[in-house]
Length: 98
Image (cartoon, rainbow, N blue to C red; front, side):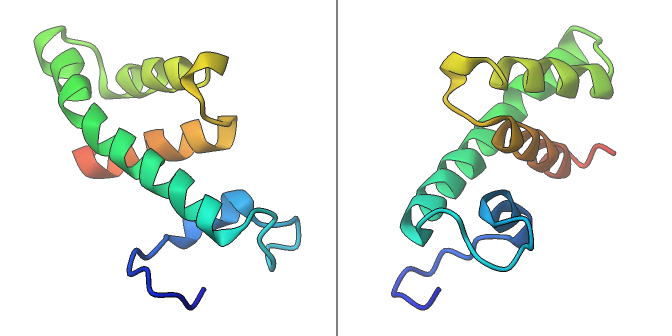
């Protein structure tokens, strides 16, 4: 992935787009980068919403993450199931939730 773009795509996201042997990308790197940027931005944007649901509505951290993943898994969300799961894992990291 040597090009002029300085965005480092984490291995956890690259793994979503690798073949079963986890050696080669199944998707062109430019498209993987676009998907990563979308998913990273989405996880960042969901922080405030997740905090609101948790603190203001009193929903447990686990339940907040489950609900968000269910919403992201809907076909009209535009994410694959793997990407939706990645966004939720990243959201949990950003919130420092287990």
